[in-house]
Length: 126
Image (cartoon, rainbow, N blue to C red):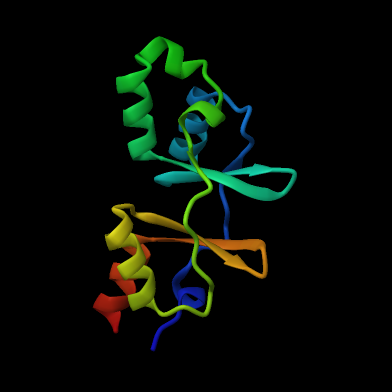
């Protein structure tokens, strides 16, 4: 069985919790990713996704959201998965949670992120 370690991205795109949402959107756009991981002192404290952008701009309105810190719009304490989990386990966790990006933790250390696209590619090539 294919594991998360085999399909995850280790090229992490990160921001801090005080980063303004508009800057996080720029980082996501430049890196061509759908999420950024929010780290504080090296520890994962949240994830900010395309859906979080939409929610922030809807609930906070565009101008306040642009200049608000990540801590106001991110999903805090996100669910994670281990690198030795199977692709099927990761997909189940994403489908059950209704999200498309899953941070990968090994022994309390952030080691990667896996997306629904990563999982779908691994299945279609399998």
